[in-house]
Image 1: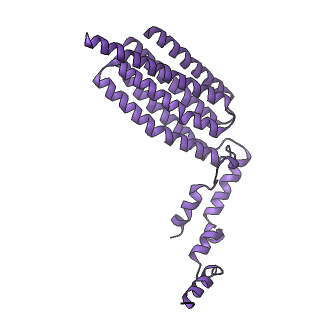
Image 2: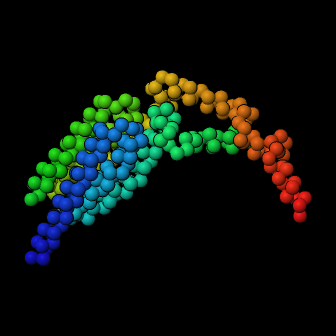
Image 3: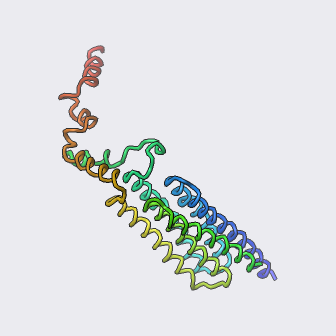
Length: 123
Length: 138
């Protein structure tokens, strides 16, 4: 009886998480199409999409009720939170270096390598 | 209830994937396509997650791990490739060659670092008098 009630509660929570995650992923797709700027699209990929994916994975973990699957899903969440800023940073830096980002949108358009190169080449 | 949730979530994720494909086709540069590909991969991961949640299939979870890793490696690889060999005409060539020029004669040409190092030798217009005044006044 109590187990059935708990299953219903976790299923409802999982459904809410799945719907919210799907909505955030949809907003990420909408932003990727509608934004006119590389940095704006990068923002969409870096923030709402990650939140949507985390909500989807949390919904799956709530629905499955399995310890091994939940640990693996937590691993995916941690991996996503670690790698998404790295990927966004690398894409943004490549866009800045290849001239696809308007330097007026960047507060300081100084590239980090110009500050990092002279101390390496000096000695 | 779960079927309705799965249908709505699948429709939203399919719309997201479709919009990502639109940007993937229309994106002006390769980095935009990289971003759109990231969105597409995440929509795929979300669709598999919805399927795993709908039918309580535990064996679909490793696919999520692999797909998230593949998306990260793909976007980072394309970003590195775009940084090394940019597809645009004017800016990348003019951007990469001055950096090499700045790198090799940069030791002689770069002013701010030269003034920092050679401040007692040549660039002592602003720093050295201030130091000497500070030493003389006490």
